[in-house]
Length: 164
Image (cartoon, rainbow, N blue to C red; front, side, top):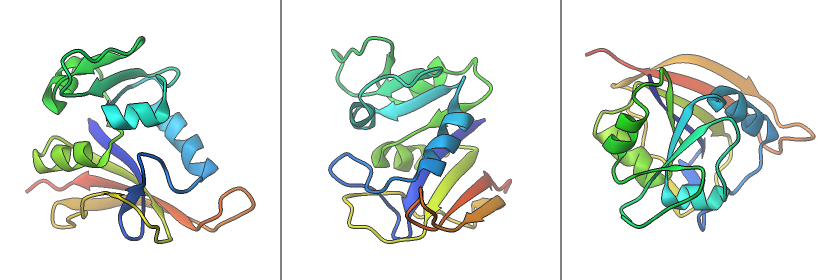
Protein backbone atom coordinates (compact mmCIF):
# COMPACT_ATOMS: atom_id res chain seq x y z
CA UNK A 1 0.00 0.00 0.00
CA UNK A 2 1.57 3.26 -1.14
CA UNK A 3 0.07 6.30 0.54
CA UNK A 4 0.58 9.98 -0.09
CA UNK A 5 0.40 11.86 3.17
CA UNK A 6 0.04 15.64 2.99
CA UNK A 7 -1.42 18.68 4.68
CA UNK A 8 -2.98 21.08 2.21
CA UNK A 9 -4.90 24.33 2.45
CA UNK A 10 -8.20 25.28 0.78
CA UNK A 11 -6.28 26.62 -2.23
CA UNK A 12 -4.16 23.41 -2.38
CA UNK A 13 -1.22 25.26 -0.80
CA UNK A 14 1.52 23.04 0.63
CA UNK A 15 4.24 25.48 1.58
CA UNK A 16 6.30 28.52 0.79
CA UNK A 17 10.07 28.94 0.52
CA UNK A 18 10.50 25.20 1.18
CA UNK A 19 8.75 25.44 4.55
CA UNK A 20 5.34 24.79 6.07
CA UNK A 21 3.12 27.86 6.35
CA UNK A 22 0.99 26.78 9.30
CA UNK A 23 1.44 24.85 12.52
CA UNK A 24 -1.13 22.22 13.49
CA UNK A 25 0.12 20.09 16.41
CA UNK A 26 -2.79 17.64 15.94
CA UNK A 27 -1.65 16.99 12.36
CA UNK A 28 1.98 16.49 13.41
CA UNK A 29 0.90 14.04 16.12
CA UNK A 30 -1.24 12.09 13.65
CA UNK A 31 1.57 12.13 11.05
CA UNK A 32 4.00 10.66 13.58
CA UNK A 33 1.53 7.95 14.64
CA UNK A 34 0.69 6.92 11.06
CA UNK A 35 4.23 6.91 9.61
CA UNK A 36 6.22 5.51 12.55
CA UNK A 37 7.80 2.16 11.78
CA UNK A 38 7.46 2.59 8.00
CA UNK A 39 9.44 3.72 4.98
CA UNK A 40 8.99 7.40 4.11
CA UNK A 41 9.89 8.71 0.66
CA UNK A 42 10.52 12.37 -0.05
CA UNK A 43 12.30 14.71 -2.38
CA UNK A 44 15.60 16.29 -1.40
CA UNK A 45 14.10 19.74 -0.76
CA UNK A 46 11.47 18.28 1.56
CA UNK A 47 14.15 16.33 3.43
CA UNK A 48 16.33 19.42 3.78
CA UNK A 49 13.38 21.43 5.13
CA UNK A 50 12.97 18.74 7.83
CA UNK A 51 16.75 18.67 8.34
CA UNK A 52 17.26 15.14 9.63
CA UNK A 53 15.92 11.59 9.37
CA UNK A 54 12.71 11.21 11.36
CA UNK A 55 12.94 8.79 14.30
CA UNK A 56 11.59 5.24 13.94
CA UNK A 57 11.21 5.52 10.15
CA UNK A 58 13.37 4.55 7.20
CA UNK A 59 13.96 7.66 5.11
CA UNK A 60 14.48 7.46 1.36
CA UNK A 61 15.48 10.74 -0.28
CA UNK A 62 14.73 11.11 -4.00
CA UNK A 63 17.24 13.28 -5.85
CA UNK A 64 18.74 13.56 -9.32
CA UNK A 65 22.12 14.41 -7.73
CA UNK A 66 24.19 11.23 -8.09
CA UNK A 67 26.64 12.42 -5.38
CA UNK A 68 24.04 13.30 -2.73
CA UNK A 69 24.49 11.60 0.64
CA UNK A 70 22.86 12.00 4.05
CA UNK A 71 23.88 9.89 7.00
CA UNK A 72 21.05 7.62 8.17
CA UNK A 73 19.11 7.84 4.89
CA UNK A 74 18.79 5.83 1.71
CA UNK A 75 19.16 7.68 -1.59
CA UNK A 76 17.12 7.01 -4.75
CA UNK A 77 17.34 8.76 -8.10
CA UNK A 78 13.70 8.28 -9.13
CA UNK A 79 10.39 7.71 -7.41
CA UNK A 80 10.26 4.23 -8.93
CA UNK A 81 13.69 3.39 -7.51
CA UNK A 82 12.59 4.63 -4.07
CA UNK A 83 9.46 2.45 -4.18
CA UNK A 84 11.56 -0.54 -5.25
CA UNK A 85 13.93 0.05 -2.29
CA UNK A 86 10.92 -0.04 0.06
CA UNK A 87 9.12 -2.91 -1.69
CA UNK A 88 9.54 -5.32 1.24
CA UNK A 89 7.43 -2.95 3.36
CA UNK A 90 3.66 -3.39 3.63
CA UNK A 91 3.02 0.37 3.87
CA UNK A 92 5.06 3.07 2.15
CA UNK A 93 4.42 6.79 2.67
CA UNK A 94 5.23 9.56 0.21
CA UNK A 95 5.83 12.85 2.03
CA UNK A 96 6.36 15.24 -0.86
CA UNK A 97 7.15 17.77 -1.99
CA UNK A 98 4.89 19.11 -4.70
CA UNK A 99 6.87 17.62 -7.63
CA UNK A 100 7.03 14.19 -6.00
CA UNK A 101 3.28 14.24 -5.24
CA UNK A 102 2.48 15.26 -8.81
CA UNK A 103 4.74 12.60 -10.33
CA UNK A 104 3.44 9.82 -8.06
CA UNK A 105 -0.18 10.64 -8.94
CA UNK A 106 0.45 11.12 -12.68
CA UNK A 107 2.36 7.82 -12.89
CA UNK A 108 -0.46 6.08 -10.99
CA UNK A 109 1.90 4.78 -8.29
CA UNK A 110 -0.35 5.55 -5.31
CA UNK A 111 -3.12 3.50 -3.67
CA UNK A 112 -4.28 5.93 -1.01
CA UNK A 113 -4.28 9.65 -0.16
CA UNK A 114 -4.13 10.60 3.51
CA UNK A 115 -4.84 14.33 3.53
CA UNK A 116 -5.13 16.91 6.26
CA UNK A 117 -7.24 19.73 4.85
CA UNK A 118 -6.53 23.05 6.55
CA UNK A 119 -9.68 25.16 6.16
CA UNK A 120 -7.87 28.38 5.30
CA UNK A 121 -6.17 29.86 2.23
CA UNK A 122 -2.48 30.73 2.34
CA UNK A 123 0.03 32.51 0.14
CA UNK A 124 2.23 29.69 -1.17
CA UNK A 125 4.66 28.70 -3.90
CA UNK A 126 4.10 24.92 -3.71
CA UNK A 127 0.73 23.31 -4.35
CA UNK A 128 -0.82 19.85 -4.16
CA UNK A 129 -2.32 18.51 -7.42
CA UNK A 130 -6.10 18.70 -7.74
CA UNK A 131 -7.70 15.53 -6.31
CA UNK A 132 -9.71 13.96 -9.15
CA UNK A 133 -12.84 12.51 -7.53
CA UNK A 134 -13.38 10.36 -10.62
CA UNK A 135 -10.24 8.45 -9.57
CA UNK A 136 -10.37 8.78 -5.78
CA UNK A 137 -13.13 7.78 -3.37
CA UNK A 138 -13.39 9.36 0.06
CA UNK A 139 -13.34 6.60 2.67
CA UNK A 140 -13.05 8.45 5.95
CA UNK A 141 -13.34 12.03 7.23
CA UNK A 142 -12.87 13.55 10.66
CA UNK A 143 -13.60 17.28 11.09
CA UNK A 144 -12.10 19.45 13.83
CA UNK A 145 -12.53 23.06 14.95
CA UNK A 146 -9.64 25.37 15.76
CA UNK A 147 -8.63 25.31 19.42
CA UNK A 148 -5.93 26.67 21.74
CA UNK A 149 -3.21 24.58 20.06
CA UNK A 150 -4.50 24.42 16.46
CA UNK A 151 -5.22 27.83 14.93
CA UNK A 152 -7.35 26.62 12.01
CA UNK A 153 -10.30 24.32 11.43
CA UNK A 154 -9.07 21.13 9.75
CA UNK A 155 -10.15 17.72 8.53
CA UNK A 156 -8.38 14.37 8.25
CA UNK A 157 -9.55 12.73 5.02
CA UNK A 158 -8.57 9.37 3.54
CA UNK A 159 -9.15 8.48 -0.11
CA UNK A 160 -8.72 5.14 -1.84
CA UNK A 161 -8.05 4.81 -5.54
CA UNK A 162 -11.19 3.70 -7.33
CA UNK A 163 -11.04 0.41 -9.19
CA UNK A 164 -11.99 1.29 -12.74
